[in-house]
Amino acid sequence: MAFHEYPRLIGPIPRGTAAWNILYAARTARERPNSDAHEVIANGRPSKLRGRKAFRFAGAIRTVAHVLRRAITLILDVTYTLGHLLPVAT
Figure 1 (cartoon, rainbow, N blue to C red):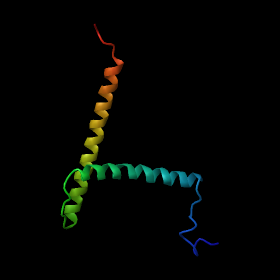
Figure 2: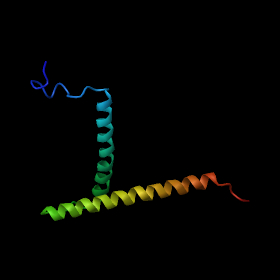
Figure 3: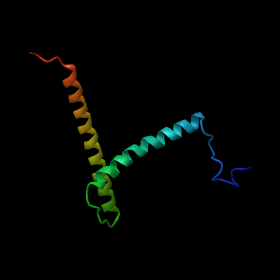
Figure 4: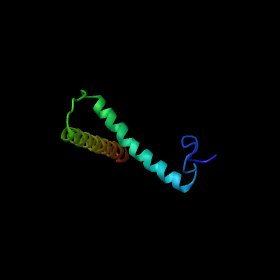
């Protein structure tokens, strides 16, 4: 069976190889922010966009929301961890 005959049945990069692992890691790393962005956007109203500038603006807002969410999560995790590590003075 040749790849050009059945491109959907045979992947060009065999699973488990080093090249496949690199591509898979990059794919899953990219999907994480996308799913976070979908959660942030799902909490708001869907926007009606027209034009390239509007889509760029929406993408920028999504990116800012994602970065803020990650920063707040990091700050809360650190303060929670430090609060449990410090001894309580009595």
